[in-house]
Amino acid sequence: MAFAFGKIPRFSPSFSPAELAVVAKNLVSQGDEAEQVRSFEQAFAKYIGADHAVMVPSARYGFHLLLKGWGFGAGDEVIVPALTYFAIPALAEATGVTPVFADIGRNTHVLDPEAFRAAITPNTKAVVPTHLFGTPCDMKAIRAIADEHGIKVIEDVAQATGARFQGQRVGSFGDAAYYTFGLTKNITTLSGAMITTNDADLAASVRAEIDGGTPARLRDRAKEALTGTAMMVATHPKIYPFTVHPAVVLGNRLGKDPIHERFGEAERTYESVPEYYRKSRPRGIQAAVGQLQLERIEDLNGARVRNGRVLDRQLANVPGLEVPLYPEGSEPIYMSFVVHHADRDGLAAALRKRGVDTTIGYMSNCAASALFPERTARAPNAERAFADLLHIPVHPNLQDADLEHMCEAVRQACLELR
Ligand SMILES: Cc1ncc(COP(=O)(O)O)c(C=O)c1O
Image (tube, rainbow, N blue to C red):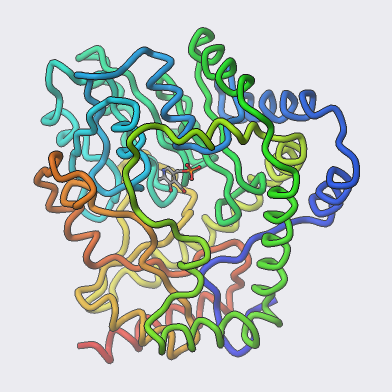
């Protein structure tokens, strides 16, 4: 079903009746939670092609536990792409490890292997190839450089669960990887995350930390389930034009972005890893939802890929617009579709006028961020992307008519801005 009146939301979650039923069932009475978690972990490890998977409360905490598990700390460095989510370098610092920023490729949005090579010092212990926006990094090149220098590879798969590089799933190239399953991700566990690795000792050290925490509160999971269901209803093609869309338009007139305010997070650094991270051991209800979502992941990602390829083709030659590029061999899942325009605020406004909601997202050029004043680095591609990127909707609920409307809206908007 196409979105009524061409009003198109930036994202739209998908829950099947079976998933909603499992949420309700687990809220009423919990099953064997340890078994539910183990079952999801095993299915996930098999899907990725890793020996071990451990559910963790958040990807950033998983990242901290990986660094800690390998014993990295003061004096050690981890190379991170400059365009990334602030929480990852912030958690490296909270662990005592120095983040070192390396540039991304132009319009690929992912770590440039040569920039990674140039950032290596005798103190480099790990590199974090981040498969940003669903686009896999060049894992062959990155793995080869890392092996040459004895550096651990920690894949950031927060935005790319299920994507492949040269036919192999990302998350299985590194020494370890982390994933996240918030409400706006391609699969969700009503918040929660996962790490995978082939290193049994590392997996055991992460598990010991998680088992030592206290279980997440069921009330919080119930709230998350309610939010997810409300989002699904509110972004339904027949309901969105009359509910969220007017709120977005009104918010924008007042200089606000209500969706960003609801889901965004204030950027900050941490003196140390917050204690509350230890108080949210994943619950059976999260695993049960994740297990069902994982059974549908190929359909959900497949719809994104279909939509993304239409946008790649249709928007390739629009004056003033640059479309994403993909490293050779990468098979993206189009978690986001990111275009570049010198007047991206003008483009966003012109698209909003035509019913299409967009976002600038929540990535930062961390190499020039006030959060990391001592880590400033030259990263021209990240700097440019940070200034001119815009996310166009690409979620699985878009139909052909929506894509057609959006592409025409983008063409008209770009003409208007010339
Ligand atoms: C690229 C990337 N890395 C890491 C994270 C952190 O995930 P979490 O919020 O589970 O800590 C996110 C969050 O969405 C992300 O987009």
